[in-house]
Length: 400
Ligand SMILES: Nc1nc2c(c(=O)[nH]1)N[C@H]1C(S)=C(S)[C@@H](COP(=O)(O)O)O[C@H]1N2
Ligand SMILES: [Mo]
Image 1 (cartoon, protein in one colour):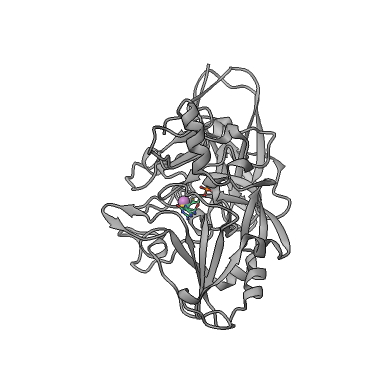
Image 2 (cartoon, rainbow, N blue to C red; image 1 turned 45 degrees about the horizontal axis):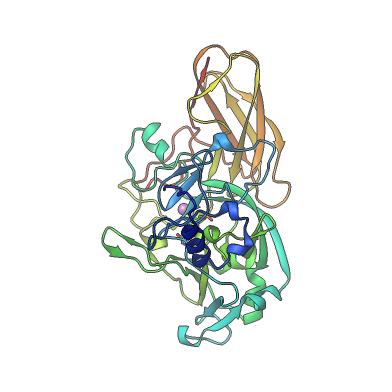
């Protein structure tokens, strides 16, 4: 996506487009392009920080500040099925309905909760990784020689942020939920997703009542700021540790049901597909273990001792061990775990001293294990949509 020079008309147009503009520093806003056009992503995504995929943009690992544990909103990847919608906190309403409420309600009879209603519930914060199911997808091709469909992310469709909001279990207790409820469908307020001539309707995905009552959050804040429009303003669902698609942005409704609910996002998309997978493979939920170096691919390093840094994360728990290789996988040593997600579900920062980088091309590898005993494999399981690339990445660098 192009970043346009701010013209007078551009500033006025972008201010009119975005209800929450006053909540974020002006520098985060992308000026509007020509009259009538409306960009998919509203915040600025400069090429120094992002790789641009049009409706999606990934964080460049080479731009990550090793001293910052949290990913700033101005640097967090964006994944939009259509485009960031315009929402206004003062008129916002969350609809809650379904036969799984203590008093069954059709969609037409939905309870509506205003932003002020939600803010009256106990506030809760948590730190968690947010990561796209397809993060690392391009490595199926570049590292495993396989072709897959979807955005060709490298490893930057991930971040760790501090969310603020209210627990979904407190919201459900306030509206009244039936003991027979099993499934909740979250729907976004963004435009319907149209792809290959098919209109799939609004982005929506069901999840278990068990997850809802465990650690699900309805979030209005990130890292102490109001959510930016691109990240779900005014309210999004957060399902910590689960695939990014589970955390529906611009949350418009929750349908609570006594029967399992379905949408294209748990049947067609975000399941393992391909000849080696059963036709009824389950919807993907908990993210795997992955690692990244805070370096560009093919980054040029000087031929003198250097401390290299990176991060590892898991949807299932804390990282307990990271092994690294600086010689293409011939020898391994433990990385120093510098800072972990002490609470909640953030990532772990690590470092390794490279004492004698010799001129030439080298491959750096990092392999993490989580406290559930899951270790990154050397080959990711092939699937046609390129989900869950969790293999140890061979990261090329040049020493000159
Ligand atoms: N309503 C809605 N929610 C959504 C999406 C979307 O397109 N629409 N994309 C999902 C996907 S695939 C991911 S990876 C995350 C990305 O969150 P972010 O853009 O805030 O980083 O949002 C999820 N929630
Ligand atoms: Mo995603």
